[in-house]
Amino acid sequence: MAQETSLDVGPVVLLGPPGAGKGSQAKRIMEHYCIPQVSTGDILRRHIAEGTDAGLVAKAVMARGELVSDVLVCEMVRQRLKQPDCKRGYVLDGFPRTAAQAGWLDALLDDKLFDNSRPTRAWPIVIRLDVDYNQLLLRITGRRSCPTCGRIYNVHFQPPRADEVCDVEGCKLVIRNDDRLEVLQPRLSAYEEQTRPVAGYYQRTGRLMSVDGDLPMDEVTRRIFRIIEDHQA
Ligand code: AP5
Image 1 (cartoon, protein in one colour):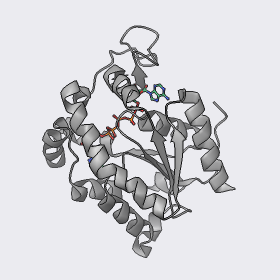
Image 2 (cartoon, protein in one colour):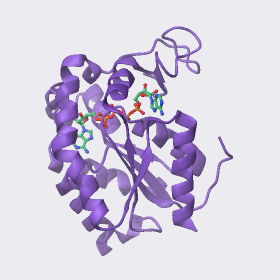
Image 3 (cartoon, rainbow, N blue to C red):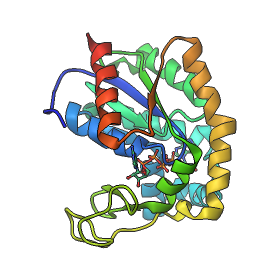
């Protein structure tokens, strides 16, 4: 991939169904533009691992493949975006995921009281990754991740050098609890019913860009970087 750049980027929103590549591409955006990845799925999994009250509520909901309540998730995002590392921009991975969350995000970015920590560009660049259904199944069932550094692998498409072991940390890779086949269908239904309308929300306001997420990982990254840089120009 191209060299790192430290230009102000503003908020980037990655939309797409489970397995579309949001997390993988968010990590590349983070490394290339030196802005943080704000993944609501990762934040929720951290709460679950730490056994917080929010984690206890989220655990059962996520295990069923449903969406956690807007109130809980929005508050987590608000707290995270107040951190100083979000000032130059950030990449939202897995948020917003409902029309209510999208409206809430616009209101937050427009809120003068939030001015202290808002990034230089208020309106997000919204990029949707479109991926074929059968490809999604392979991606989700083949996904493995490193419990230490969070790197994402895939036994079909991006296998680690040694079987089931992280290339960087050397520890055993894990399978996410909600990547079980029986949870997959509810997750995909939640996307169709609750998250697809979010793309419509951004499309109506002329802010939606689409990328063919079926392409090889590096090509998807190249197209995303081009969108971000066109937006900066
Ligand atoms: P979350 O963690 O956000 O999961 P998700 O949206 O279901 O997305 P995934 O993480 O499954 O996929 P991804 O698009 O990041 O793909 P990845 O890069 O890993 O959410 C989990 C749960 O938390 C939700 O179900 C919900 O309960 C709750 N939640 C989270 N946010 C919420 C919110 N805002 N509101 C309410 N509830 C919320 O890639 C997948 C695999 O494909 C990998 O193995 C990767 O190596 C491979 N791959 C990626 N790109 C390519 C490519 N181009 N070619 C080949 N392989 C590829």
